[in-house]
Length: 167
Image 1 (tube, rainbow, N blue to C red):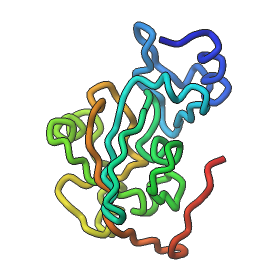
Image 2 (tube, rainbow, N blue to C red):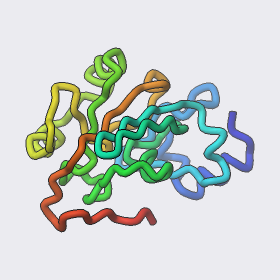
Image 3 (cartoon, helix red, strand yellow):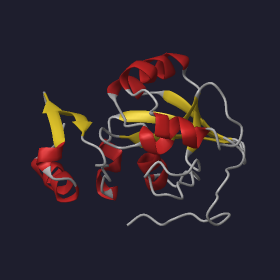
Image 4 (cartoon, rainbow, N blue to C red):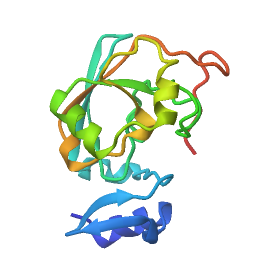
């Protein structure tokens, strides 16, 4: 599904050797690589995520693409997911609850939580059995159509309310 223009745009952000492709689909980006899709390509992203924002009661369905973390998707689509540590797994401000049970079960097998993620989740507000950090979940095909809930509050140990701007 990538045109040569889209591929060139992607390769400017991520070095090609950090990506693993199969049959034209991005299967894996080696950490700590994250993919920021250029705004002109957002309509071509293959998957959808439905965000349930507890603080406002809003429900938003947004596009997502391979190689993005949930935090990347949220930032690109103006979803209010904090991510104070900018995806380095040193805070719990990108805490989400994966509402799609089948997706959560696959995440447990495909992208299990690390000890570092579990330690950060221990500090999260409204911790649930389906809680994960958005910065640690890389988009995969089985995540298409999943529902994610953002709790009403976060615990930001650095500066309350600080939200870094993407660069």
